[in-house]
Length: 324
Image (cartoon, rainbow, N blue to C red):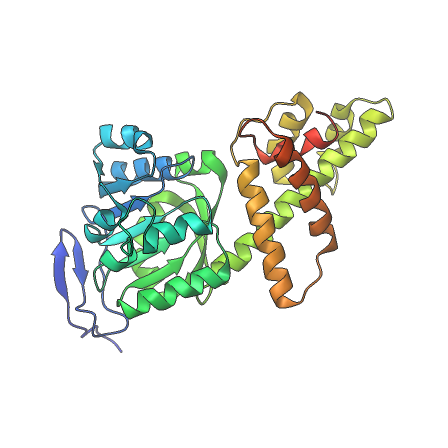
């Protein structure tokens, strides 16, 4: 097809959205478009600030309303419920802590009246992108419900840490329709430096869980190696010095090694979230019939540290298993 003959309707500045009778309506999203953001934690807040700086009209909601203060001060509107955000948005983004939190936002019981929720308020032709880390099965469930409402859905979990969110340099792992992704790219370009279309809905979550499993294992391996070196009477800094010039060097260790050496674990990526992601990865492995012995052992170590933690720590705190 050399020209786009699909019908279009206007829904706001810089936005043209088809009436929903076509499975891939034309959407033109750009500065001035109405974007909703649900989830204003370590990642959500800087993502929202970047959207405001880029000229998007932003409506936000968070269970703890005080977390919206910096965004409201920058020009965002604070909604009273998830469904209010969804109803006001040409594109909706969610980034919440875990599957129960996401289900509550979408189907009720998380700031919404019973049986309500954001999903039921999305307008036909709009885009919905979830950047939480949840199960691929939940992503496919959301995709099916979105299709019923003629909403384009992308599962698009992120990596890059709080520093990446602040700089607008996140990496998105995307599952969903290629046309919906193309329509969402102007928004993605504000929050991230790169995105990968990995397949149908659920693909983004599958890759994210696998990648986080690698990160968890790498940091756990460094913690074990440091415990071995120090128990043998040598400084952990010596191991890290050699590590940085060897094949064992990894970018995550550049960031986490100083934390392990100092025994300081401010939550850039909280331990509770990495523990949740490892659990989801192990559940997926069980569904797929794949044994993950190293992951299962590391999960036990992270579980022990999480159970003993008195604070919200970074997942680098796995070192506390050997060095309380």
